[in-house]
Image 1: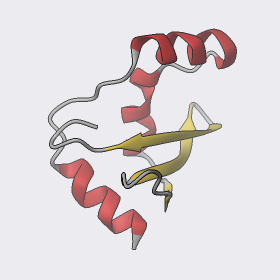
Image 2 (image 1 turned 60 degrees about the vertical axis):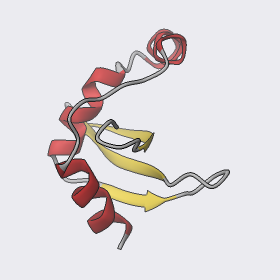
Image 3 (image 1 turned 135 degrees about the vertical axis):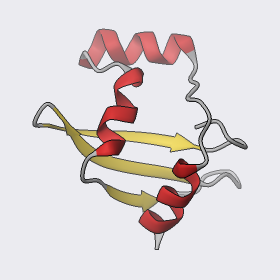
Image 4 (image 1 turned 90 degrees about the vertical axis):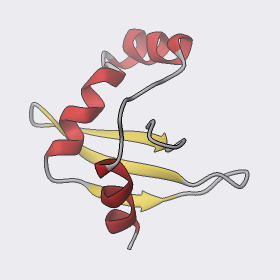
Length: 80
């Protein structure tokens, strides 16, 4: 159910956005660029919905160049 909801919402995404300081921190610590999330979303994924503070959040598990990765994302209108 969460995966179907996520894929339906992802199909309507116009753009991706993130907190620049969080993006920089994750890149420094884990060498993963948030920009690569859209690549992982194109392959096989597993999605778990994990709401917090009244906001629908999705934990997305996928692959980037054969490395397992996990992203947490939300949707605000047509922005992921």
